Amino acid sequence: MIFETLKLAIQAIRRNALRSFLTLLGIVIGVGAVIAMVTIGNGTTAKVEEEMSKLGSNLLFVLPGQLGPGRASASAKPFSARDVDALKTQLRNVNAVAPASSANKTVVYGSESRSVTVVGTDNDYFTTQARDIETGRPFAESELRGGQAVCAIGETVREEVFGSLNPVGLKIRVDKISCEVIALLTEKGQSGFGQDQDDIVLMPLRTFQRRIAGNSDVGRIYVSAADKSVSAKVQGDIEWLLRERRGISANEDDDFAVADMQQIVAAQTATTTMLTILLGAVAGVSLLVGGIGIMNIMLVSVTERTREIGIRLAIGATEKQVLMQFLVEAVVLALVGGIVGVLLGLGLAGAAVVTMNIPFILDVNVVLLAFGFSAAVGVVFGYFPARRAAHLNPIEALRHE
Image (cartoon, rainbow, N blue to C red; front, top):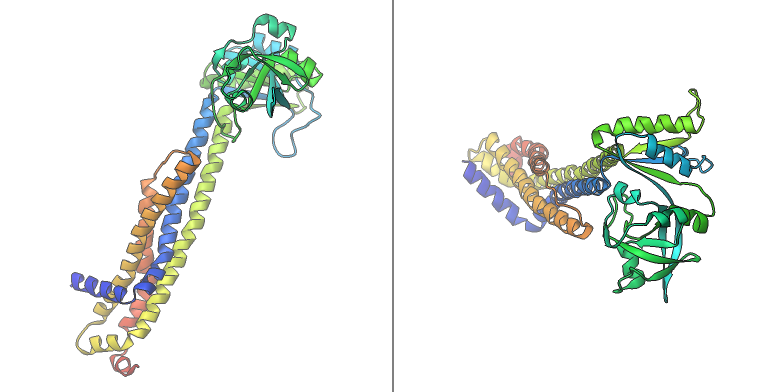
């Protein structure tokens, strides 16, 4: 009985192949979009977590002013070298404390030039940022104290400015000063915020302050906690020490901010996860549209086959058999659309992860949910046309032209 009903359903679908294809197209697009969007979203979330983890889960950023829209104050009191020294000598459970001030400047070598991020810092920067030196050496203590014109460059700067040359030992012009390249940094690629971490030039903080910035300000401070389990305690110690040094009373708000990398990763992950859910939900609307399309076509099919239905009822077919015939047609359309949609979604997701260079993370539950929902759409939206066909009056159906 079921096999015969399925055979009749397939014959009816093949009789109107083009119309059937256009009907299941909505299901195909809906299922494919849901799977592709969720898979791409999961890959993006994993990529963000991976890139953030490269900086270390125990990293803290100390910035003047408060974070958030409308709260970051350009007029906030900057940090000083003494603040950095105080953090280095008085904080416990930390690996390194690195000052950093930066500006976008033009780097020139021969006929090549490039606008890059120039950062004034010290050797603790390599520890806090998990940066290694591929060739060359770190800053000498005399270079840091005396503010000598030496620098370390990233791979992007080497490639764009020096080409195939080994830059170590050569001199470049950074803004208006001649600077000797003493190190080439190992390649790190894009950060979790989409920035090229290799498009950078590092120089001693005093050199940057005297010859680039023209002041003694420290723009931000990086603190690497000994372990992520003590990050919260270190954050509290930093806040207490800086409040004391900056003369902030108990009833006043901080004029600086301490951001924990773990909190940043959690916030970033929550954002990408929410976007994934939103995109999946929007794509899921296509499934409802596809279901409405199935109901519409099945209603047309009932009208076209009214005489056929009348004959079947007249020769002994029961209402249940007619109901089952049209319901199976709708479900077959939805299931075929679901299968093609799953393949399309996996194909689109595969192409996207290669293009976007993100991991392919397939959520089997989403695939099963999308496919199951397509079958449910076939049952729900196919029931009403099938019920209408089953309740036709045989005599009136036979008279229908």
